[in-house]
Length: 89
Image 1 (spheres, one colour):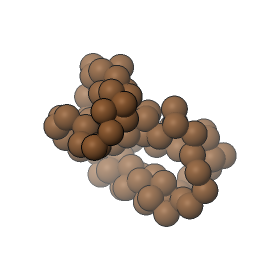
Image 2 (tube, rainbow, N blue to C red):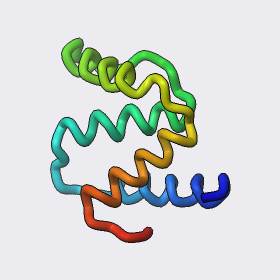
Image 3 (cartoon, helix red, strand yellow):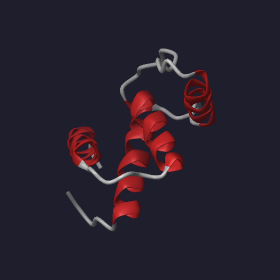
Image 4 (spheres, rainbow, N blue to C red):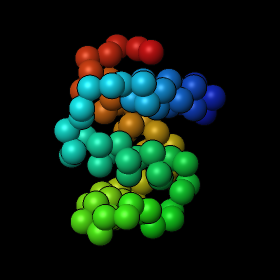
């Protein structure tokens, strides 16, 4: 997938998740969070006011720390498609 297609597909996957209104499992949310942060080169510490949530988010980021931004985008897209049975956006 070329860079432009990857960014377009990533934005569509992010839009899908942003507009999804049903509750999502916490483990899925944490993976998506980590992939999104890395894809956007946002390496700031988690900003929740709840220390436990910050710990979970930090752990998710540590687990994905070796990914390049493009890899994180691909993993985000694949995860969304797999979890929601989507073939294309």
